[in-house]
Length: 117
Image (cartoon, rainbow, N blue to C red; front, side, top):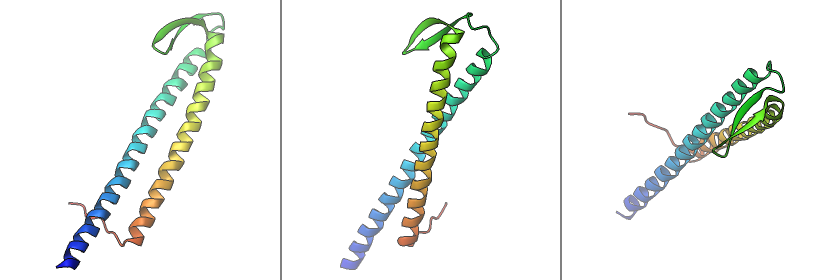
């Protein structure tokens, strides 16, 4: 009877750990999607602004405030932001891969087989 209780407890711990891994992976995937979307928006705006004259007036949203600038002022800031987003995206993808590898190692170590229903 005692081994059954220990086994049930162990099974619950394994299931909780598996759920934690899956939740973490899902959160990372969501962040990656958000950053990819934002990077794509930056690219689209940069592609639109590149051919325009530098002294042309444009507007930029900064912390919820619409600010008037010129194209030559906005392009460097957008380029810097786009590069920063690319770096963040690369870091998130690395974190995702590491976490995925950790999950696979954990599954092998504990002889876990996922059953889809």
